[in-house]
Image (tube, rainbow, N blue to C red; front, side, top):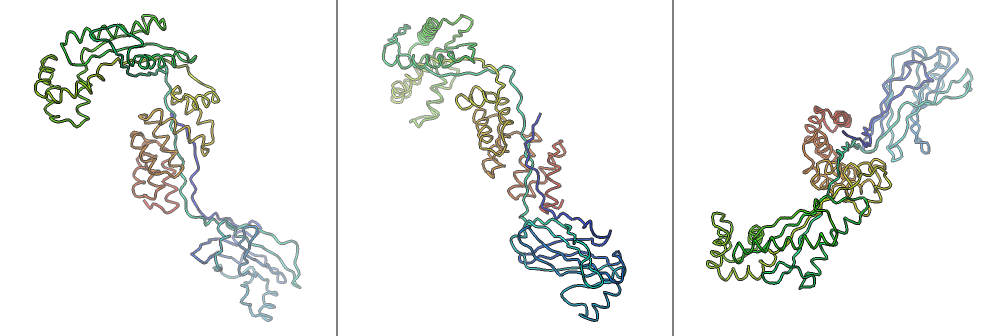
Length: 472
C-alpha cells in the first residue's frame, strides 16, 4: 500500500491560445522562441476573414508584457478597400506597420524580433485590436486578448515522489539488553552487592529493568539472564560456577522486583570460547593464527583445548588470562516487552521527541502524513524513522525520497542501497538519476517501474520527453 506526496512534474511549455475577439481563423500558428539575447515571435494572419467594409480598418498591435514592463511589436493594419488605397497614397505601406486588404489576400507569415529582457521570463503575448472609422476615429473600445503565456524559466524536472506506507505491527515487541560483570569471590556463587565493582554492575541491570517497568505504555513479557564463565580451570567447575552464579543473579532480580516465574528465563554457558575467539580475531597478538587454530578446534574437549593453549603459547596465555578472561565472566540480560499502539498524531510527535524507539514505522508514517512534505518537521520524521529502523527497506526508501526532494543525491543513493528492489524503489532510483542529469540511466529504470505498475513512472517519462531530456 502506498501514499503519494507529490510535487507535480513541471514541464516548461508554451501555452497557445487564439484571441477570442478576432474572427475565427484570423490568427494561428502562434509561437514564441528565445535565444540568448533575442525574442522571436511568429504567427499566421489571415486577412480574408476580416470584415470588408471599404471605409473601415482594424489595427492589430501585438505586445509582450508581464504586467509591469511591456514591449510593443510591429503592428498590423487590416484595411477596407478605400482605407487601403488612402494609406497607399499617403504613406505607401509605411515600414513601421504591415498593411493588408480586409477580406482578401493570402495568409501572411508575421514575425518580429526584439531584444530579450529578464522580465520576459514569465510574461504574456497579447494582441490589442481596434477598429477605426472612415476618418481614422476609433469605433468603440479596443479589445485585448492573450495569444500565448510565456515561460522561459530553466527547464526543471520536478517529479512526483512516491512514499510507501509501512505495514503495521500487530504487536509492538521490543528488547533491551546488556552485559553485567558481577565479581564473585573465588569459587563462590554468592552475590556480594558491595564487592569490588558490583554496585555499578548491579545498578546497570536495575536501571535497565526500571526504565521499562516504570513506563505505563509498556508491558514486560520476559526477562532472560545467561551466565558465562571463562575457559581457565576444569570445565566441570566452570559449569558449576556459571550455573550457580546465573541462578544467584536471577534470585537477586526476582526478589527485587517480584516478577512471576513465567517471566524469568535463565541459561548458562560454562566457558565463553566464542567471546575469546572474537577477541583474538580482532586484535594483533603474537602467534595469532596458531592460537586461533587451537581455540577454534571443536574436536578437542574444552579442558584439552585450554591446556594446549596454555602450554603451546605460555606468554600469550598470560596476556589472555589477565586482560581478556575477566571480560569473559559475564551475565548477559535481556528485557522483552510490548508497547501499546498510538493513534493520535500529537501524542506520536511528543513521543518521537522523547522516546522514538517506542514508535512503529506505521505510527511515524502517520505523523508524516499530517505534515507539509516540504517542512523541516516532515524531513525530521523520515530521518527518525530510518534511524530507528536502519534495516527497513521502506524506511530507507522514504528517507531516500526525502533526500531527493532536498537535492541530497549522495545521501539518497546511500539510502537506496538498503531500499530493496520493489517497483517503488526502482522508480526512486530512476528519479534520482533523472534529477542528477543521468537521463540515459534514468530511462530504463523508469520504464521498468512503469511496467511494474508505478503510474508515476509513465508520467515522468512523458515529462522528460516534453522537456527534451530523453528522446526514446
